[in-house]
Amino acid sequence: MIVRNIVFSIIASVVALLIIGDSMGELLYQTPPSFHYAMVSVAFLFTWLVYGLILGYLGKKNFIKFISVFLAGVSIFAFIGNVLPSKLVSNTILLVLATPGIALIYAPTYGLGYFVPLNPSLNFTLYCLIVLWSSGAVGYLLGILLSNLVLKVSSVNKLSDK
Image (cartoon, rainbow, N blue to C red; front, side, top):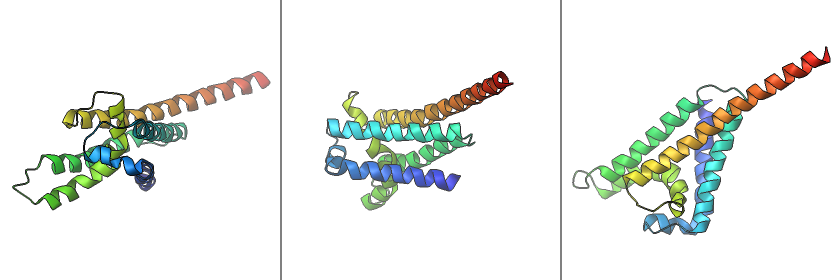
């Protein structure tokens, strides 16, 4: 289960990065994202919502724990890469530490800056993390609700057939 979740996470992020393509300069130079970048971010969040919905519907346990641990782990790398003073370690090491967080979380959600005032800071990064986590969690909860609704409807239909 955890391997499937990690593979999904990486594939979703890589696909988003490939679609963003030339727009990555907006992230690198911290300029306001374009509409194209915003739509990629919305699609990325929608993908997480649908994935959570499917896992919730199928009754797969531990998705909320996975998304929490995964996002926390990846964001720690980004945080260390951004906060660690470059006097302590070389800039290359900082870049290596920050890359997983930037590639898997921050880059695909940077387009959210199109909808909110862009402030490339820790607050905006936290905002992106919260929105991404919420997208998966809401999808998961909707999946559980949908599964329960289907069970209730099918049990009512069985009772009415008798």
